[in-house]
Image (cartoon, rainbow, N blue to C red; front, top):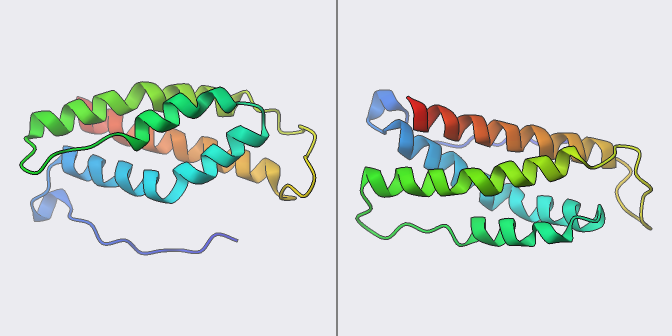
Length: 129
């Protein structure tokens, strides 16, 4: 069962821009979920996704980054995230399980897909607002 983790982040009402909030969400997603997604893609035969995963791992902002820098980083994250989502959507839910792979494989696939859709929607809203 997933546990609920309360994360404190700055809201627009308290001064953060939509880009900073999206950046915070992207960073939290990368820290919390990219490793699990990589494992899922490996066991489901999508090893070629490593390029997109490495692209996301390499995202970086220097100290003193401007809002334009943040916007460019968020824009550069979109294409690899879309490709990862497309790969996850191609994973059959009734795929044969390998060895001792988790019994909740289908839930893992669905959760990964939902989280990718969520982070992409967050980036889209921030970049189009």
